[in-house]
Image: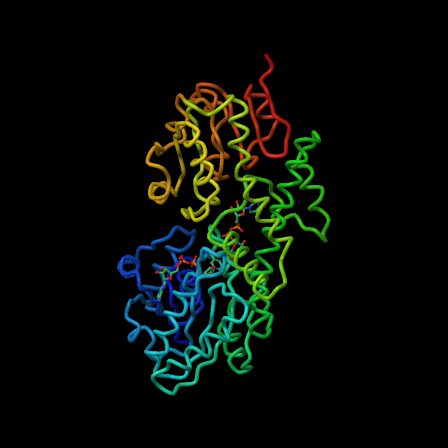
Length: 437
Ligand SMILES: NC(=O)C1=CN([C@@H]2O[C@H](COP(=O)(O)OP(=O)(O)OC[C@H]3O[C@@H](n4cnc5c(N)ncnc54)[C@H](O)[C@@H]3O)[C@@H](O)[C@H]2O)C=CC1
Ligand SMILES: O=C(O)[C@H]1O[C@H](OP(=O)(O)OP(=O)(O)OC[C@H]2O[C@@H](n3ccc(=O)[nH]c3=O)[C@H](O)[C@@H]2O)[C@H](O)[C@@H](O)[C@@H]1O
């Protein structure tokens, strides 16, 4: 099928390339000329495993093209995917400005009957608004059917998730359009669930909200473990082995970040308030998460009796491993707090340094290696569990740090190894380790 994808970010680019890979002809449209320039030259503007290969192969096969021109991009398309951003407004609700601007462009450039598929995460009722909006602004009399296909990929494993997702949700009121979308996705061989528009929108928010709730829940249990002298790693394993609970998203840490959980929780909470059905559990989930981001700063401050003048090697800046994305990364408020309280920051991240430079204080010193960041620092804080950090030899922490002290926000190391290496080690939800003197 000839498909257009509007918005060439994490969702749009990955979806476009994966649809091309299973045999469709895809044109990706974006208003960001820089992004489109890069893509036209064969360079991916984002870091995702497997994406470069997909880009190379599908450009060679002429199954994908990139443009800023809506006229050219929408010509002869049977399906248009909407994958623009829906960021958070000051009041917590979703900002649909980019989405409706893209809908306006569709209405003004459409010249054939088309199915509009919404991949962006949008509040309940938005797809009905999209349907009305395009009809109202259409310059021609083409038939438009709106279908909701919410996206569940994770950054860092976006390509893998697209080919091996747990389910594809297809929501719509027009049965024929829903069946056509199901055919487009059929080559992925992933179970499909068909719903009405509003249920599809709700499934997306409820899924993210539940996953975020699992994280806040385990973080609270972790904090309790510290008081109780228990070990959260064992507790998580023991709890997660119950099939009714499941072992995913039970990893305690410094809180969830990213472009989606924080904003999607805010959006569904705002929606709940609007329809007078407050979501008190989710309000708590958010509060617990905000508090969790402060935990490491508190531990360092307690250990050094204040932060003034100490040098901290911060390892990992992106909101999770295998991505250069810094949106709502827990490293941002943490580093800000450390600097405000007088600490000096040496930072290392395998992929996010350039993005971090635009977001963090210009007082941060960036290093290309873990060795460089550690050299002479009073302690190290681990915020993101990159493989490079987990695999870094403990003896080198000991060699380079001025004092062998680690504050680990992702429980990367076993207590046994820390003990054997004579480290002073603070983690999340586990007993602190002190060198035997
Ligand atoms: N990032 C993720 O892992 C996931 C994101 N989502 C949802 O998907 C949507 C997109 O998210 P991302 O891909 O992360 O966003 P992004 O910010 O990476 O990309 C959005 C793209 O849309 C472009 N754009 C904005 N207005 C446009 C317009 N009028 N015409 C054409 N292009 C336009 C921007 O230039 C940008 O390249 C959001 O609603 C998000 O909540 C859903 C699941 C996963
Ligand atoms: O709607 C979205 O955008 C996406 O949001 C999340 O994906 P993503 O934000 O890419 O990454 P996750 O792997 O979910 O991690 C989010 C945050 O939670 C944290 N996390 C995750 C799991 C865990 O057990 N503990 C934990 O603290 C991570 O460190 C990270 O900061 C969801 O997992 C995706 O299904 C969804 O499509």
